[in-house]
View 1 (cartoon, helix red, strand yellow):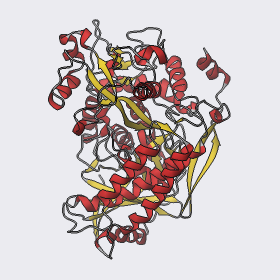
View 2 (spheres, helix red, strand yellow):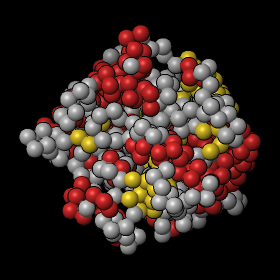
View 3 (tube, rainbow, N blue to C red):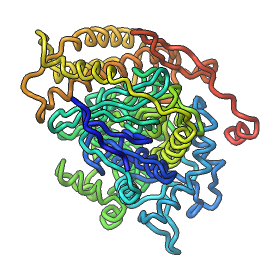
View 4 (tube, helix red, strand yellow):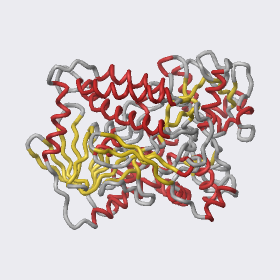
Length: 576
């Protein structure tokens, strides 16, 4: 068990491995690290079980071949590579496609429940851009079941858990990780975690946009902390707009409408009643990849064929009430309670919503190791697997496959250390002073106002459709907001103070907004989720490059990095 020591102004905890984030990736990493016999601490910003993983409702993508016997890892590899527009790290994709079935069966052994075929095997449903029916599911509540199962396993593994704790800085001993510092959200007590390795599993940063399926926690803390600690980021221009979020009423705009609706037969129609996906992808139709469907809805709206509130209609009424209530119970209840709509009788009005980021911390394919020794990352915070566009269902299997690998390799790293990293408490003191600064001085800026302004900038200048002029304008506005963020001011005390919490969030989000804009400006082509109206076609030369963001003093640098060259036998799978 991790140990606690009182140390002056900090509650101090000693552990071998610190895992930050308690979604699917964090829980799986903690389970793996604890299985090696090391002391493991899991820290989460909210409550245990309250993770964004539950928003992955439709299923876990794994080539079990239970419904379509022709499915195998090779087809899953090809689908994922093509979906990512070939800027994925092929080594990650290969590991992922091969290991996903084992992770699903492991989850089943641990008590995970799945819908079943008539002969008792795990049932699988179709999803966008997957060749075969591949998604293992529990109605439309798969992410919730994954979290329930992993959480039960984790709490019986001897893991120490700290809930409602925000971690704000990674600590280093020279170039290697030595721990982290943060605070308890209820009363502001400062915490210092001495750790030999850290696994980041903090998810994405959808809250940099106003219309998003993401919850309040998704402010990019982990990715920004990694950048500040010297880690490289990659593919930051790739932000996924899920094509179907709720549109009306305004208070629910952006809430996810799972792709499982289309997987179970839902049809997208415009204001004229036309099945418009016949124009954009006559082969895959409504189950085309998310980038294609999102752009198609955008084009229909721009052409004047959108729904009353700027989206499209998603209709599954033809499947019948009994089928809908059985297969999509959460969607039925969501629309009934939030929009007073019975989806068994009426279509849903939907529009694209920010849902996922393909970019993040650049990691080694097999280990999850970042460019900073002792720092590992898994799940949405890590880049490389999904390339320019993630296929639906690949997120949950990503969490399982690479959460396990990051936890195992963090443990192996710790066991291989010759000397324990030393924490320099001056770094913690610097962070403490930074966190307390909004209570001092003569600043006048509101963190809530700045958050709203940065969301407006991102929506206007880095949305589905982008131009070089818009991106340059957006970057300039973000830089101006960064200057204003140095003058944040909050009142009150450290007790239950959401304004104070928002201050560090705003700094993190502005860092990631800058990385998105700088990367998007550099990629002068359209590829996957990155759609440049001034460069509307893919450029073959860019198909061989990733964009890597690094810190150079106080400046942010963007450079190209060759995409790892795929071996001939794997290339043949993609071209088949």
